[in-house]
Length: 162
Image 1 (cartoon, rainbow, N blue to C red):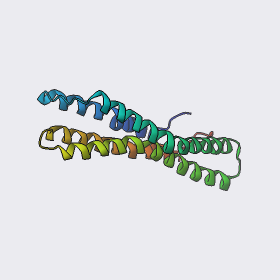
Image 2: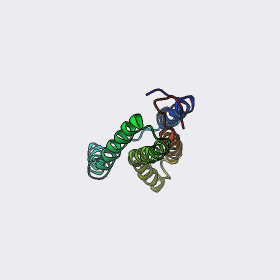
Image 3: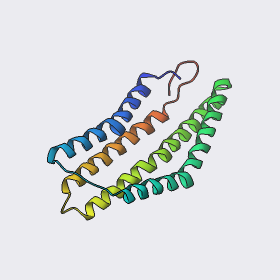
Image 4: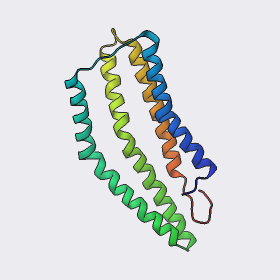
């Protein structure tokens, strides 16, 4: 799939705010004060198991259904010739892609929100970490907004983007 300038811009901002900036904030916040946060092996194992269970039970099935529906709509868009039907398919495809992005983004936003609440509860010792996690959460939310904008741009086979 070729990217239009608008879709490419949204994709670049999505990657920037969802990956690059959170990693930089995390690295800089730990280097700044020499802050070391240690989580025991049981805590890490529990977090991984909890993440896996939530993702497996609730999110994966919904995302799979949305991906299948998106593929179906894309194939219909490729073969449809009626202008009214093309517009209807485009709207449905944009809506499905937006829901897919939101369903995919629920997990990291939820985990970072829980981490923010935990860090707020022990704020006296790690106020610096709380601010860094808040900035990372804000950055991921902004990245999700750009992912939604990216998903709402639909390109047809004839080259125009809407």
